[in-house]
Structure formats: C-alpha cells, structure tokens
Image (tube, rainbow, N blue to C red; front, top):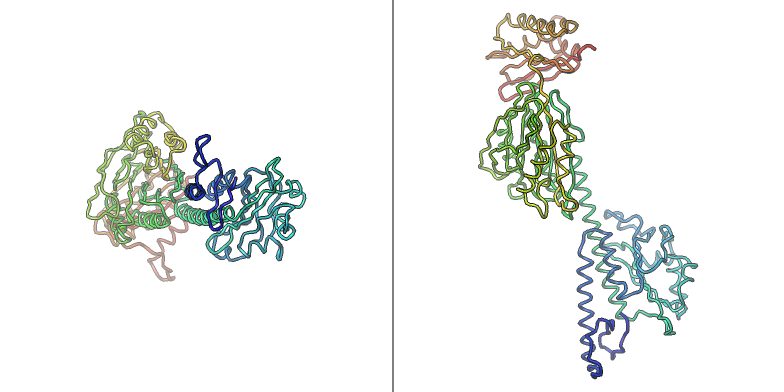
Length: 591
C-alpha cells in the first residue's frame, strides 16, 4: 500500500498513512512495534471490508465492479479487469486454454478502452501467463528487467499505449482463478508521484494483498457465473414447461403474463394453464411451487402435467386438487409444497366452479364494474395431505372477468399481502369492460418499481358466454328407435339456425354416434349441438369405453360409423369423463 514505512526484517508492512490513527501535534512518534501492529490491524481491517464487498453479490458485473472499487485508490491508481472471451459456462469450456481476453472493467485509466478482444496467441506472453496461472510483475516501466515482462502488457494494450504511460509507472498483472480454470486477468497501475523523482513500486506486501483479493474475486466471479448459468437453465426449464400460447375456446377470451423475479433469488415455480373441456367449458389454473430452484421448476412441470391429465377426466375442481395433493406427497411432502387455484368456466350455463389450495383468492370483476376477491375456503397447500378441498359454484355472467394470480403480484419487500390485495381490488374496479390483455396490464400497474423479489404468473379470462338460442340439448333413451329421433331433432335445429347446407352430413354423423352410444349405455344418452364459429355436436353416454376406428371388411355391416365421421367432420374426438365419455365432432359454418 502507499506511504510505506521501512519495517524491520520479518515485520509486517505498513498501510496507507491516511488510515493510521492520528497523533497529537508534537507528541512523540509511537514505538516501531506499535506502529507495525497498527499497520497490521489496518491491513486486516481493509482486507475484511474488501472481502465483504467483493462477495456481496451474485452478479459477475457487480463482483468485478466491487473489486476495482476496493483496489482504487487504496492499493493502486488504476485497475483493469480482463475476462475470457467467451466466458466459460461449462466444464468442457473451462478445460480449454483461454483464446482471448476482453476488457470488462477499467477504473482510473483509459488504457485499453479502444481495443477489441485480445487474442492469446499460442506461445505468446499472454497465453503463457494464463497457462502458468501466476502473477506477472511487478513491472516498472524503464526499470531493470522491464524488457522481460513488458511483452505481456504490450500484447494487452499495444506498444503505443504503453509509451504514453509515464516512465517509472508500475504495472502488476494477477490471474483471476476460478475453480479449475483461469477466468481472466487483473492489471494494477501505480503512477510515480509528481516531483518525487522516484519510480512507483508494488512491494511484496502490496503484491500479496492484491493477489489475495484477485483470488477472492476470481472465485466470486466463478460462483456468480455458475449461479447465473443455473438460473438461466432453471428459467429456460420453467418457460419451456409453461404454455407458449393459450387456447381460445368459444365464449371466453384469455390472456396471460409471466414475469421472473428481480432479486438474486433463483427462478420460482409459478405456472398457469388453460385447458379446453367437453361442453365448450374451459379449466383455468394458476399455481405456485414453494421455493426457488431447479427443483421448484421441475416440480412445477410435473404438477402442471398432472393437472392436465386430471382435467381431461372432467373431475370437479376439488377432486383435481385432491389428486394433485396425492401426487405432491409422492414427490416428497417437505420439499414440494405448492398452492393452486383451479376453476372451470361453463359459457353455456354462465357459471364458474372454483376450488382453492392455499392460494391467493381470484379477483372477479362483475359486469357493473365492481371487483371482489372471491371468498373461497382457503384449503391447505398441495402436498400437506389429510386436508379436504371444496368447490364453490358462482354465477359468471357475460361481461364479467376473472383474474388468477400468484402472490408475487400483491406481496413485495415493503408491502404486506393484505395491502396488496386491497390495492389490486381497487385497481381492477377501474378496469370495467377491459380486454383480458388490458386486465393483465392494469393488474401489473400496482407493482412498485424495484421492489419485486418473487416471480409473477397472471391468467385473465373475460367471459362472453354462449347465448341460449345457439344451444340445443336433448336426453335420449337408449332404444333402437333413438338414432332416427336424434337425426330428426338435429335436422330441425339446423333448419332453425339456417344451416340447411350442413343438415345431411350432420344428421348422418349424429345417427352413427348415437347408434354407437346406445349399444353401451345403461342410462339416457345426451345430444348437444352448439353454434359458434363452428357447429359442434356432442354425444355422451355412461360407458367409459372410448370408440376406436377399426378397418371394416366389405361384408361388415358395423364399424363404418367413425370412418364416416372422420371423413365429413373438420375435427372429431372422444373424451373420457368421470361418469362416462363424450364423442364430438365439429364442422365449419358456411360463409
């Protein structure tokens, strides 16, 4: 450090004079051993403070910035940090010799700022210094031995830039060691004092101090790079398991948002989903796996997949949560708790059924603009086990909307959940007749800048409903004459809707599906026609056996029904339900 005393051999070096305790004017100088002890204490205090500052962040840029701040001006007049280009992100890249260095941070000098990445030529001074992983220097320009060490700095900055430095300037290069690799180079510059006539220098104590801080910084940068890489992998994993696009079923408009957290915490386990169900219904799901890690993201993917499977069985919302709770317990209860809200919207009945598992209550915006947080049985988080869940059925009139969200929206570092919920409710009260996209934007406006640590998932649904006059529904007894009656009922409905052009094919397909249904049904068969941008027909019965297309021989009288449906329908399918199945087909309406 600066303003060195001349300690006796074997004694620790001094520290800057400005850091020594002041003495009274005229007072005798303290004994040498006392001054040495004071210098040692101050050096240790400096190292402790520098260590805390260097290790205060998991951001590589922040670590490098902290390093140069603790070095300049206490230990050097200027500092430059060069990192490998590209920075190694995996073990294979770490084992390769560094091919280039790029100036990452400079403090107190313009040296090297206009240069691009410097290539470490095989056999050159820079490549040798990085391979030896040892310090270079200190070098005093114009001093003894400078010719031996100067090639490294010439390769880094160029001979012309070095020539502009004052004679007697001291340079010191130190490797930044990561775990099993050199990540870069730290260069310190100390200028000669004006009028002193003496060259600047780094003594052994300064060199060891700088080398210690460079080692700490190298390990901190390495930790930050590994952390950043893991966070990126976790974020990519989570985003890959979230739906890129939501379905747009008839009678409801959907929008979503996902925002990762802004803190040093790793990626969380928030998720959302929308799943079309039979009868033009749609399941709306938002959940949050507790914790921030790769494990949280992986568990989120497993729970989302399980929820999709359970939704396909058309189970009530509380039954879906019950089975998700069982799945989470199999994954490991202590580490895989999650909250979730599951809702099913029926655009024909204009009703919504909701169940909650320890999650934030959804916000319902009524057609008159009034917003409320639904008063649902809170339930316990998924994974706790032994807790019953219950469903609540509510009206969802056309013109209303529902917002499902995770706690990152309403809870921040300086704002409790209760205040955030009330702020959200008040904000949504001004979002009357907004589209679901606008609803998400309005909800995000309650976030204060720079005060968000957790990730956020939003799912907004605007309910339009399907008018009753666009729906025809019948219960049919499983009798031999039922297929003929079903044909007549379907034809009558199509003529009432002015869809005579679709009548022949529709009656044929309805007859085939109803014929298949009554062969296995023990209870009345259901037939429903729904007119939207498509004509959808659904035939339901109480048999869980799904129909399969089978090749029919030329003499077979059966087995041709599904082939006809596949030929004339634009789309068709079959869904197993909790109490049977539904077979459906769709046709585009004539323009």
